[in-house]
Length: 506
Picture 1 (cartoon, rainbow, N blue to C red):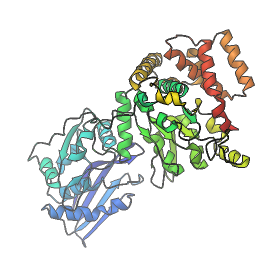
Picture 2: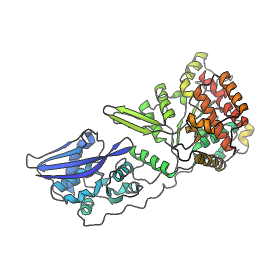
Picture 3: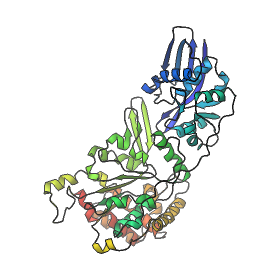
Picture 4: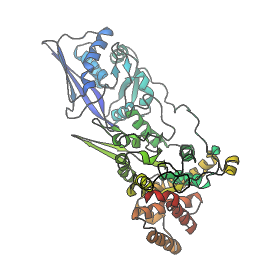
């Protein structure tokens, strides 16, 4: 009889939890059993491990083998336990020194030929290994660059089971991972220099980017709503290092960045309108991050907002307020961050030409179309902008600005906000709670009177009142003003009260 232990990690939400792999080999009828609340991919690892050992030239014990993944109450999902189980099995069979497993945490999938493959969540596993006090982490070579983003942890980049055994036996030095680098430049972002006309929508984009505000673009089809929204990432500030690590971790857990370097660009997610509520906010029988979490620290763009299922849109309400999604399943709760900018576009009616002679919709059709967007959802939009059809002269004219110029204005505003919220988790004006609004968004007597009059006349909610103050604070920051002036407040009110967009809430 022989017993060996290895340490690995299970993905839990966007973090990881330590799992102790215990393998017991004893005399008895040949059998290989894995216990410990594993899913189908974990149970299937028996066949992968058996083939990998034999094809790599190792002995597979013809005995009774039991592998336990502790804690047993934690659900284990995915093939990332293969390598740790195989190493513990080799140690229990005397083919690897048992004491060598004490230094390393192990994470990776095995192929039938013994190659080691990357798995989702390598960055989260590396962070968990450092928290758990492990001195080193054995990972597939294809994922080592991602694991190397974590400081204070020795990373061994291995390509096959034979390499793993050689490292554990001390026959070779642990292969160093490739140098951690930033993400290679991808496709060039669309530029505002391509836009003709649209003075007010461009101004709204700059204000939204400067303060992290939500934006709704409404207007007839073909006027440039989607074109404008897709240029928003080109004027956003770059990710800070903590933000980049968090974005990389989320995308790694979701399987979008397996083995890549640190994310450099703020994400832009643009799901199709047929997406389900769980696909949008996260969930499923085995909870996974949704699009709102993929857009964390970036932009979630919902084109043709009125075409989305109402259940999906209503599911956005809590993440927009709380900045996170809580998914509760039997014996498990997963929390995913979801601090994103919501940018949406929509038509005012099914044909898109409401209010003009071109409209072919019946009055009932228009009302039903507009009711698809609930009042509570629209109340969470900071900027409501009507995108009108540009004139022929505007189309033939010069651009109003470039993304580089707009990005410089946004960067100056964000620098002011960074200094303002230093020492807090808040990064932009849109995240200001009401207690900080009283400190940083105070109004003079004229401003108070103006806002009170608008509050009563337009029947604003208390949420709308606060959102106007946040937008006014951003407009003042763009102007380089320390205090919010009446002109800044009036501009914020105009964005909130744009009649072309507010018709959607009728």
